[in-house]
View 1 (cartoon, rainbow, N blue to C red):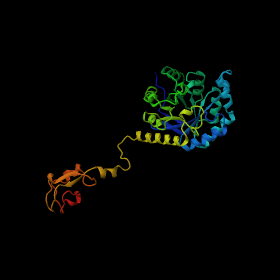
View 2: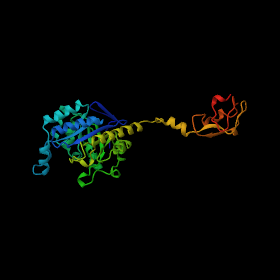
View 3: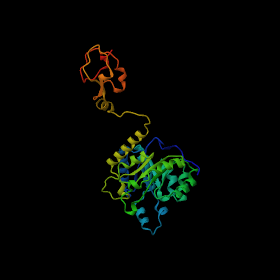
View 4: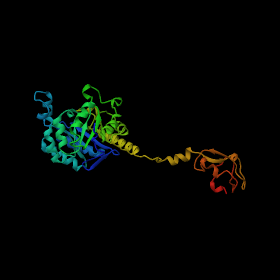
Amino acid sequence: MEKMGKKEIKIGKKTIDNNSVFFIVEEGQLNQGDFAKAKQMIDLTAETGADAIEFQFAITEDFYIKNHRGFAIYEKVQFTFVQMIELVKYSISKNLEFIVAPLSHNLIEPLKNAGVSAFNINASDISNPQMLDSVAKSGLPYFISLPLADETEIEWAINRIGKINPNYILLQGQHSMASGEHGVKPMHSSLGYIETLKNKYNGIAGYIDHSPLTWMPSCAVAAGANVISKHLCISHNDKGPDWQVCLEPEEMKQAISFAREISQSINTKEKVLAPGENMDKTIMRRSIVSTRKISANEIISANDIAFKRPGGGIPPSDYEKVIGKIAKIDIENDTTININDLK
């Protein structure tokens, strides 16, 4: 297949490339139609250090048939378009990029005009040509969520819209909450597939973390993810959608901090001593010491020296700077030899 991705994509004011970590807090639908709670989630997200917040927005008539129980559920919690616009503006005021997972293709154009930073094609819509086409033709950058998808479906979606709009990022992940599992177990996360996606489509890839673990985003970053998406809740007492995999605000701060630190480590390509290593070196390394009392003006031989802790003196690797030198002063037995004591 033709490679059609991009190595650098701008989401709002932020640029994502293969050396960055772009962290998305997914609000999902924890608000359950409570507009004040939705704004509170934006406030909490801004405090975590995340780059963006993602909301799911829907027009229920575009989403469910009327005689399905899901219709009544979504109709009850959907926001008005005026409220959606206000949430977009409020997030921007908090220095957060606003990402929408549209569950109605009719929302895409008006939300683009409202100033959203990007769209995320929900995992449930990867086989929906109406949604794919509308998102791609919006001209905005977009994510393609890959939970539930097999490779045939992924290729079909990218072949359809990748050339129309190559500003996409693939998000590896799994979604198993409906089965009764409390999130995806690390052994089932297929983190190695992140690099496969990057190489196969010549672009950027990330990870949607549907585990309850604060350290899982760091693992994904170590596996090559440049975007992380993870659910936030106000409290673990909340039992909204995807409650099993949500983190509380302090946990989310920790997860984001871990991920950024791991990214910094991975992007350091030269050998750099960590803070404190020079101090440890003086404790753990050895120095050149005397094996006998050496009198002033004596020539030092190989038999006159040994290598012992502590460090901080002449390193053993510099033994040639000591052998054959003349002692300026008396050097006691089993004593660290100082370079200034030699001539």
